[in-house]
Length: 164
Image (cartoon, rainbow, N blue to C red):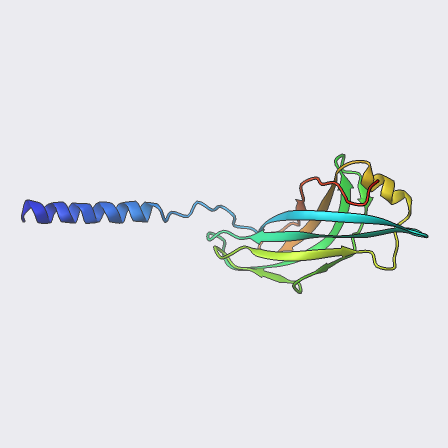
């Protein structure tokens, strides 16, 4: 075999090894990994209480090493303060997609937008003080069909609008 042909084959093997090394999947999410992003809320004083509106995005991720797809449902979502004190026990939410949400292993993340709206069911006036006292967090629970226990999920702390 000529030196040129041998060098070409060596270069081809090296390229194959480098390309193959880049394909190693290091994603360890064998259960659904959930995050709450872009959480926001607005409080408005009404004559008989507080109207709360807002939204957040629930992002669901499942790594390629998972045993299969997952079916995800959600429990309730709450608004808590930074000391884990519940400010609003059960947020009235509507999701942009019907549950259960199917999450494929190794695929694109599944993102679901939730809208918060108390509608005509106003919250007590003192809830505004608790919401406006400092940053709040959206906290919730998801149920992952691949896991044997519920998974808690929380947003980053944020300040609500309408506090003055």
